[in-house]
Length: 56
Image (cartoon, rainbow, N blue to C red; front, side):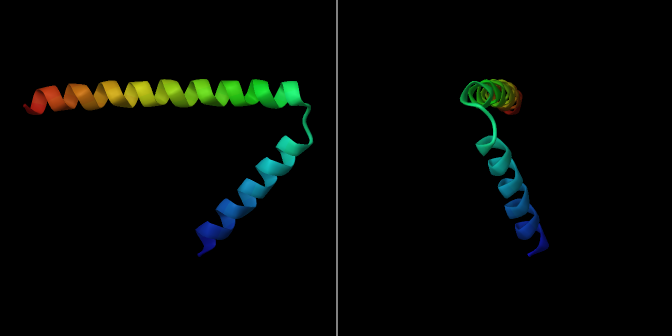
């Protein structure tokens, strides 16, 4: 239950910070986060395919 409160508190802080930035800053941060998530997903996908080939 403590983790739920911590996550909700962190989400509130992040949303509050996003609400106080300008739109270009918000969009730039969103683009950076999106690029990082896409790179992470691609890396995990490649690793999954390599493991799948080795197991087969």
